View 1 (tube, rainbow, N blue to C red):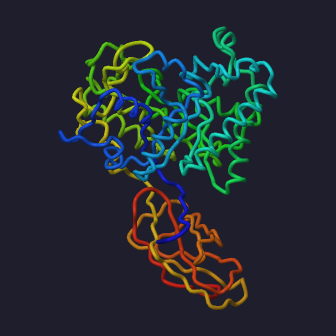
View 2 (cartoon, helix red, strand yellow; view 1 turned 30 degrees about the vertical axis):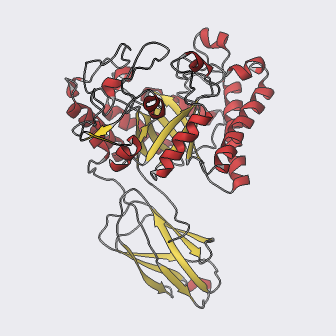
Length: 462
């Protein structure tokens, strides 16, 4: 096996599967073509590469629902991460930083921290220890997520008292930036101690609110990786798919050091309901109407192509498996989203519906460069000014940037190389001082495999 592969410029097709454990405990069986099938297998088989999972601090309100089992707490998230990793899918862990749903209208501090909500240094310390401790706990069990999200739809800040939350709009940047930076510090301090990397997402709702990222940066919240957006036609109209693409392009242009991702989206496939819980999406775009599985798929494909064209890192669908069940939510029996899942009302996958969005052949989608057992033998070196690695690439369209890594025989990464821009055909990469030995070459960029052949080491200045 090739050791130490690196990932760069991958486009993620993602799904928020936070409800799956609960649905299965409530008696739901998922089907594909009429046959029972693990939902994680269904999504992996349809090119889902990223699973998003929400984490509540202490969702004690579940104690009075159904069988009193809590979901989206740390124990439940561990179950979900293990399932995702068993299916070779990356994980985005969404810290809601609340005991209940967090969104632009609700950012209530966990009850455990309510006594210190007005003592900013103590609250910062609580947040820091929670984030860092959670990551260490997960890492110790082999469940470290590849990405973490600091808060959910944090347009108005995080960790508000109930009174401040209920009083109306507030955005106190002195307090807000201190809290976000404490959470970010917790992630980076974990990385330093564990020797592992976790990407950090900041999440805002509505592409029209791109100004929120200007304010994050202007107020010193800068040490993160991904700008995450929610975009639903139902709630963010009249913002169009094309305008959402314009926002992605503007953010990528204004802040080239950050990636941009649609971390939540959704679209209905029917007006019908299958239970007693009111459905929360009740609007469709006139160009994708009436709702149908095909319209759902078309809307997702068009949105994804638009954001690919404008440099986005990925698109995540919110709760495509939250089907009807006999269980209750806080507001009704069943699901509030069964008409926007990827399953019909018998829990059978809609093969002509939204799930096909992930396997559509998109234009301008970068490739993954996979190198298997590419061995380089380095015997002796002349002067460092005349040392380059000569790589031939065949039969692919190159992305703008490729990253390569040389790994020693014992698995130690010894050199990182990059072509930017990359020229199709032949790459010439300068090498640092390295001892004689056997090395493996690893490289990735994007999501699709393509042949890469190492022609050899070229020594010289041509």
